Length: 246
Image (cartoon, rainbow, N blue to C red; front, side, top):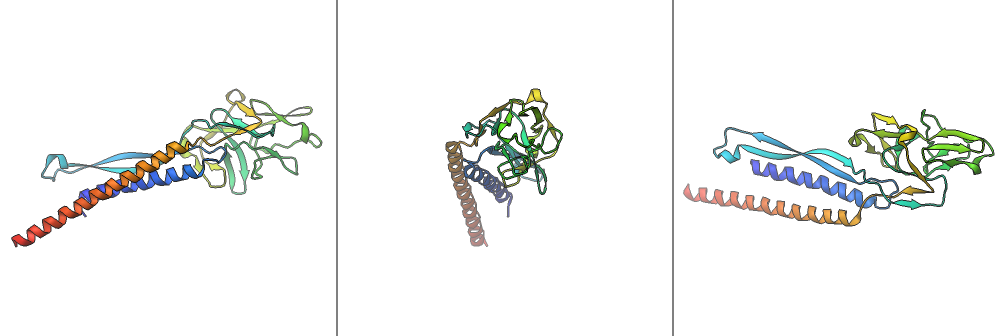
């Protein structure tokens, strides 16, 4: 396989990555708290002094550097539940799962049978100290959440939602069950938190944008296949000519 074929293969692998990301975005158009992903690529230039033609001494390949989240906020979706929250700005609700601490922007908040604040999946929501938030007995119907994440009961504050922000969103990885994992996060101070209650954040995926991206990927792949076929034709013609000379 010559260099041109390797370059085309590199390009098609990048297209496959784009396709996977776009398809996943489309599948989560209606997923609460979902943030669309964008693939990240880098150019790798291989330099060779052995090429006869000067312009052929530098060969560019595509390297896959993963994907990052688009931090554009999604639309507010009213739910009628006064405990549900939409995070306006950076940060994730911190939850405790059987496999460890995880994070989510799906702001569904419920009170469990044992009077703890939980996510829609039943995971305990942690406070700013990393502990579950318990509601005093008999106050379940009087719990409210303020704009800075403070959880208020009938007799005052009973805790504050622990929102965790990450300097590098590329390190936040979807786990597949509505939550994410990440490292290097920090708990936001009350002054850094802005919540809107009574609803949740919808997905920020725009179906038209993703559909356009899918069409562009298809056309790019078709062009790559045509170029590959042209290279095969050139090789076949060269072999036939060499055969006749022999």
